[in-house]
Structure formats: structure tokens, C-alpha cells
Length: 302
Image 1 (cartoon, rainbow, N blue to C red):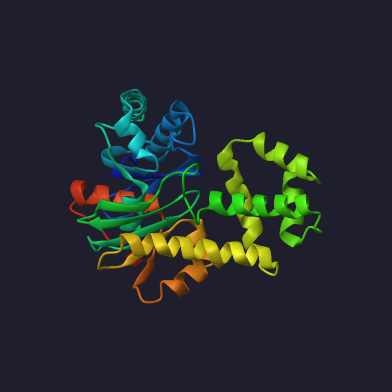
Image 2 (cartoon, rainbow, N blue to C red):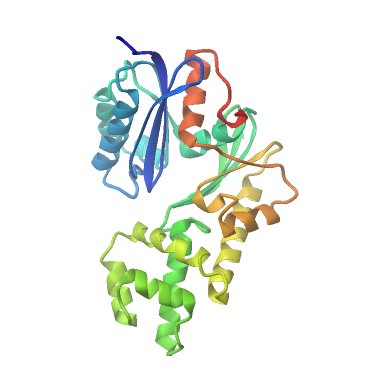
């Protein structure tokens, strides 16, 4: 029996992971896939492109594509570097699509995953951080988003780096390691100053984001509590800088209500109408469905 359907594919990809969904005209998800990080600024572009294509193909399965929206971090690299753009074009062509996808920023699909309104603000607190002003469902201005080397304040990378830096300062001064410092040393598998520096430098810089959960798990430690407070304030400042009338959509693991940083962020954003993004891939699929099917129920409505 042929169970193939006409579907749209939505993709949401960042520095840590990519997720793809296939959705039929009724709004039912008929395929899902996931893979590793796809930001071409933090991963080799050929690896990032292959991961996106693999996720699209796996989510699509036997179904017939009617459209595809790809939201991903690092789209500026595709616009700035023709060779990288060509890599992604070839990958998309081999993913089973009948035409090129609409490539948007991860912020645009995150906004669509939180609201069906066309205008507002989106703040992403994930591996990286960025806030965007959205008008007509497209990004028109940004705050932050400079990447791990130049900014991304309040992001998982920033939080993890601050945890390591605080640990190094404690070790350097001979202070007894507190709960956070002990957790960092344990996660790195070392017990001294030089070992921690060596362990961190042996991994890709973006791997510092893996230390972020240690901070939110050690709130009784004043050092961890201070990092959480500074992260929430940094993210709030980005949102305020990009703000426009409408909802403020929060996306990313650190901005989640269940995360201490996300909880504090909601407190400092108290004057604004804050909503949470659902799965960004569903937001991307919803945008694709507007064009292909005339729309279906917004993912946040159910």
C-alpha cells in the first residue's frame, strides 16, 4: 500500500544539532530526523551541509516534497562565501527535494515557532545568542549574534567559558575549589590549573558550551549564581536592543522556562509579552505550509 503523502519539510539547525520534520497539509507530522550541529561557522562547511541534507532526506522518507524551509545559524557565511553556498546547494539537490529550499535564519524560524503574528522580537539563548526584530516574518534588525569569538554573551558557550574562567581563577589564587569548580574539574577529567587549560585547548572552542549545565546545576555556589545572573541580564539587554511592538519569543535551551537562566530572564523581561517557541523545525514547516498549502494550524496552538 502506497502511504506517500504530499508534505512540506521544516528544518531548524544550530551549532549543536539539526532537526527536520515533514508535515502534511493537515498539519500532521509524518516524518522526523535529527543530526549533529550545522552552523558552518563552528563546523566544517562540508560537514554542516551534509548533516542538513541527511536530516531532510531522513524526514522526507517516501513522501513527495511540496516545499521546504531551512532555518539555520550561520546563514551569513552562505551569503558571504560562494564556495560554501555551492556546498549547501549541492547538498540540498541530493536530499530528495524537487527545488531549492527557502533558507532563513534560525531566528526567523524560531519566531515562527512561537507565534503566528508577523511582527515582534525573538531572542535565542542556545549555543550562541542573538536577538532579532522581526517584521512580516522576516528579520529586519539584530542585536548580538557576533559568534563565540566576538560575543554571544549569555549563550551556553559564554556560560561554559565563564565557568572555566572562574575555576582557573580559583586555582590560580590557591583558593579551595567550590562546588562549580569541582564540577568543572570533574567534567574535564583533571585536577589542576595546567590540566584544565590543556583539556580545554584540546577540544574545539565551541565545546566550552558543554560546561553550561554545570553552572545551572550549582546555584548554591555564589560563583554559579553570579554567572546565571549575568547571563540573564546579557540576554535581556539583547532583547531590549532589538525590541519592537509585539511578542518576545524566547528560544534555545538557556531561554527555556525550566532553566534557571530562562526563569530569571522572564523576570527581567516582565514588562513584555513573552512567549516560548515550540520546536523550531515545526516553525519552519509552518512557514513552508503557508506557501505550499495555504497554511495549517500553528504549532503553538495545540
